[in-house]
Length: 613
Ligand code: AGP
Image 1 (cartoon, rainbow, N blue to C red):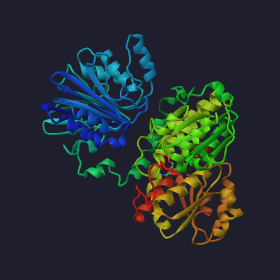
Image 2: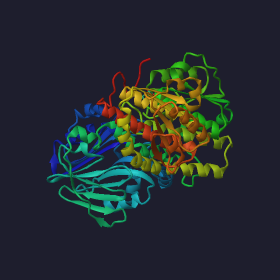
Image 3: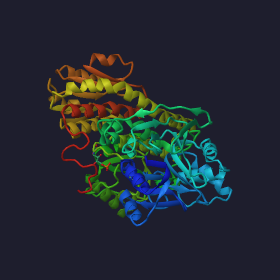
Image 4: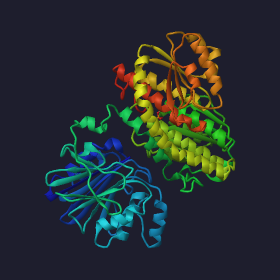
């Protein structure tokens, strides 16, 4: 995700940079790899950008006076192209006549870039956004709105953009598909922003753009259209939030907001990595040749906490599809157990922050021992990405809540892509099987939305049941065993209720001694190979007065014989079920912690990134 802001007024405004910077500061939680502003001054378009946090741009601007009647700004969460000054937005066309800021992923940008390069266009960045700027200039013949319209009709993927042209300084053009964008109606001034916090100081009258909308924004007029040119009206909403609430987009906590952002995080991580025909995967960024992949005889996945559980899911998937032996280690163990590594071993680090000390050190060890290395990382340019040979970035956007949710889901998207990619390169999967699998992946974001809408209310109600307990046991089997572990971690880290995850088949080897009326069991028992086995485990729990809460597949009637409470989720192939099954468990932890009155986003004793051992 990135943050966008646009401003336009009648007169040159000496405070325009303050307005843009203040807006970007309130959007910085959406991305903080680099930032930039462009101002329409009397002398023309002035562009200033800086890599790193917004404060670096502020320092740069302190000695520069920019006065203008229109301006746009951007704070970046890097997707295509490393966090550098030349990749920072705004981006310009070859003649520096127009500037564009963009949030989203253009899936066909490489095709468009080749088409433009063949026409002589030269590019200064690695971004998909610069391609948009060049395409608009390619279509520009004196009417910016028309040039933007023609460009939008060529784009595939997610975007919210704001465009400014030196030859048409009286208006800005905005457009939105998939990534959020709204307009702010001021008094003789108007605004464009990624979301409310950026402009709430100036206006509370907001117009949300919908997918396929575009807008021409004048200082005292807003013209809205569909991309095909059809004029339209959108209602003006009056926002009465306070600013802090606004940054949570109306949610009470970042955790709940991020749980609801999971379909987008999953979809954005798939992004442009699956070809339109679902025939092949584009994972060049992992920097592993087909020969290296074919020569692998073992994979280690090293991570901590939630990321470790994503790695456990990855093990099931890579062994299922690519038939490569996978070991999953917590990084703090891996680095001290003198692992056996060589040039036919791939070590994969999974980390949201890319700064976790144990994982970073583990990767340095892997490099020293001559293993191939890669990362599955959320934060661009973070420490681990500077150690590994390649990185498959997850596009979850900044995750603010200490309890990781959308990053976990994006990690699951990444390990699915890796498993299918390794299988294809090692000829372990037929093209029809691959195509079918990728089609299933593409369906998941919609099924995740369906799950969120179906389970949130019943899970919220159910959370009152768990309030009275001090211990919980989470059970799962197979690919859902890691989900039981993750569900337990979520509950314990934000509600402080002791919770353990266990492989359901292990009950008879000890844990069943714990079962009585004071030990509830939360079981993941959706359709799958071991369904009957888990049902048997739950019968043993009920026989000892244990309360059973089950996550089960919609339509399952048998589960009612063994569960006191059932949370139904949509049916998906078992190998994809972790992506769906984790959602009720995240929500359960959230609502229990909420009812216990704890600080959900900043639980005691924890930090978002554990950069010390
Ligand atoms: C997850 O909810 C926790 N906050 C924690 O376990 C986290 O997953 C772990 O510290 C790893 O962090 P990383 O993904 O940034 O490496």
